[in-house]
Length: 314
Length: 314
Image 1: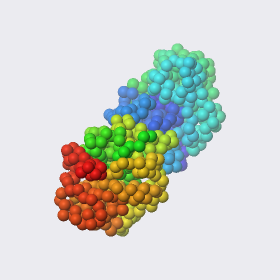
Image 2 (image 1 turned 135 degrees about the vertical axis):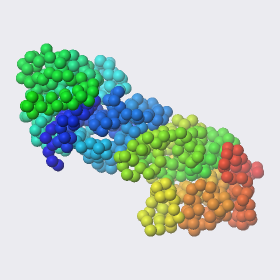
Image 3 (image 1 turned 180 degrees about the horizontal axis):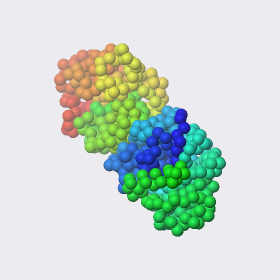
Image 4 (image 1 turned 180 degrees about the vertical axis):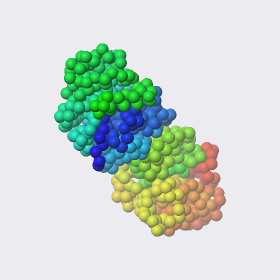
């Protein structure tokens, strides 16, 4: 397989929006995206890979825009019927969305790898970029929580509504997992390495935990990241709660510190311009721009600036 | 588990209609139905049991009346999405119907038996009768066909439209299968044994092929059957083609001959009254009535007459 010169580390919604801008400024056939699978799990025997699907649906122009996940206009007839048959159908799975999980599960049981199935599904959705799961092993992120049982990420986020009770993040499953075929090769061969505005702890942190990935990233130490924290708050999701759980500061500077061992620069929002000197003191380059990806124009502009920054031409 | 005094052998649509009448004249908690599973198969990794589901949906008042299978008002959004992901989505599975198959498959993978899962699903649909799969083993009926590959029953019926090309019916998988727990016990303890107006070859014939079933039925030789053939034609389905494939006559008399070793009597339609003497000459009792189950009244009346005939009070 030909090496694709631009390699991106990605989580879910924020990554998908960033990538929707990136494919406007990089030919998609030059892109490899290494995707977090630490939030994957089985629901009713069906393998659900939230981040892979969010990216696929977004880039195919099929995502439900209001939420950032699921398919636009999807119905929930199967899920409603499942709720009459079992008590634990709390995860939102639309009827068309279910087809993806049914197909993925069927192919995995037939012996296809997650990498192969992902390639098949992205091709069926008309995508030309390469989505690589970080690993083909099950590598669920575990959240240790105050006064309740540990849970996986979807239980925490969707079932429980992401309360502020996470005491520690257990990435040991990812740390025991071999990278999927192509992941280390992509990281070695990349001309440009970008980190999406994703959760630094449970999306990018999980990818970094996979065997061999962090070492490869540290050897290069040339990634350009986009901060998912704007004005001390995540745009979406529980990144604030999870940054605190790992003892990091909930700010673009806190994110920069986490990325210091692997990144050469970070893109932060205008509202955080005042943090630039402190981040530069960490040895990281800084670019300040609009990072709240509220429309196509911002997505494209942010991706373009990040790419040029990484190329050294901006 | 308490023995239920009325035991019925059943296939799909015809059986479901007959049973919808029977539950009006027998308290459902006194009924055990032994159901053909020779048409079961996996679609996209989901276990589909057509006859169990047709009976469940019908007795729950949820069946799509026009076809006799599937759920009334169901949508097909998942299937349409699946068709964009794979080429072989020819089987009709509605969104709500899929929930049944997802739940069954999940429970089977968790280690539940088909008998247990069937009990759970029928309970969730509010049924009080007992549906027993004939076996918990995979026991697919194979049809040997002229000028093409052998196929399973759903491939023949749904994918190919049931052409007249069946040369032989291979029940060897059923013949190698152990009966599900409770099947032989129910057959031994039944006070009344009925055979639904189902396909004598691939529904009732498949149940009879399961290990130990035919011997138990022959010991008793007291079943009362309802002919699924009216005026030399099946009401629905390919019974004519399959009767010919096993060298049987496509008539109520041909059905009676097949049931002669296990039945004491048969209920036939008015249009077949002229066949009564020939059937009586086989040693079987005959009752003539309206058997085309076009409405609730006929279903109930047919079930009532069949039951009373079996009880010897008619």
